[in-house]
Structure formats: C-alpha cells, structure tokens
Length: 117
Image 1 (spheres, rainbow, N blue to C red):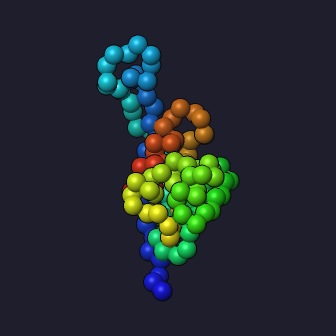
Image 2 (cartoon, rainbow, N blue to C red):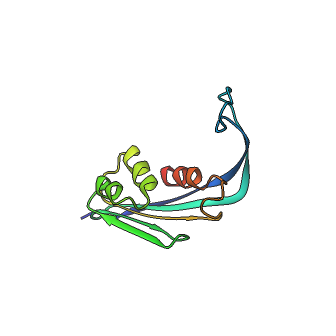
C-alpha cells in the first residue's frame, strides 16, 4: 500500500467590476481585480473513496468515487474539478475560503483553481 501524497494551493478571490455576465453586454471581455482574500485547498491522493470537507462552511461529503459525490450534490464543484483533473477515486480534499459564500467575490472560481492547483 502506498503512502498518500498531499499538496496545498491557494488562489485569490476577485471582484468583477464589469463583464459579460450582464444581459445585453455584447463584449466577451471583463474587468476584475484580485483581492487579498484567498481560497485554500489541501488535496491528498491515495486511500479509498473520495472525501471532501469545507472548513469554512462546515460541510463534509464522502462517496466511493467522484460520480457518487456529484450525485449527492454536496460540493459538486470540487468533485467536478477532481474529475477534470483525472481523479475518480482515492482523494481527500479540504477547502477554506476567506470570503463569505454568495458574496460575489469569486469564491467558487478561487476554490476551483486552488483544488486544481
């Protein structure tokens, strides 16, 4: 049995000042600034199943594989990032973000980049 390997990464949250999220905006460009608030993740590869924990939202989810985690609907973004990175099983992920959920400060994107990192 191999020892799990772990990596940590972080990514800045952001504030969109203008962009193509608004209806009627014909330009595919946006203007955003990075904030000094970051999302952080720790990913351990190895072991059984997939286990995800959000330290700031106090959420935990586990499944046999990524598809099972997506089906549960708890933290599906993290599960989709793991799938995109080629990890279907054998991962333990912890996340934390220093901006409030739903604040519009790019929490989801920063968490996704930190997990992929």
